[in-house]
Image (cartoon, rainbow, N blue to C red; front, side):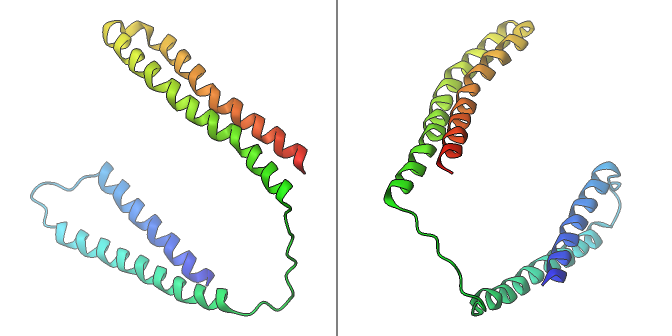
Amino acid sequence: MYWLLALMTMSLFGMIAVGIYYEIYPLPQQANGVKRLKGIIGINLLTFVGAQVGLLLLGIQEVMAEPTTAQVVKEISIGKGLAIIGAGLPTGLATIAAGIAVGPVGAASLAVIAEKPEVFGRTLVYLGLAEGIAIYGLVVTILMLGQLG
């Protein structure tokens, strides 16, 4: 199965490399290489899709196989589940608050930059302060999850 992953990876890298190469060295307008390029990209795309289908078919076989060892199921109590949900709330609420704060600050920043381009740096500071709200919520969630351990 690893050879299919390698094939897909090489196919993707091939498409990216061809795109970068022709972005740096574009074809002249009168060149008839467009048909050849379409064929190369088509073969590369078919290889990628074929590898994906093969990986899917082999992956289903791996997933449907019976486990050889007994798996240990760790149960979570209702209190622990509610504690985990409570630990995730600061990140969610802080992200919503940051989105609400960034909207007006960003709009005002664009209006000011249109009139005075030299205040661009200061407007970035204000946007960073508004985005910091989400970071604070993430830090609080990480601290709370550390206490749950």
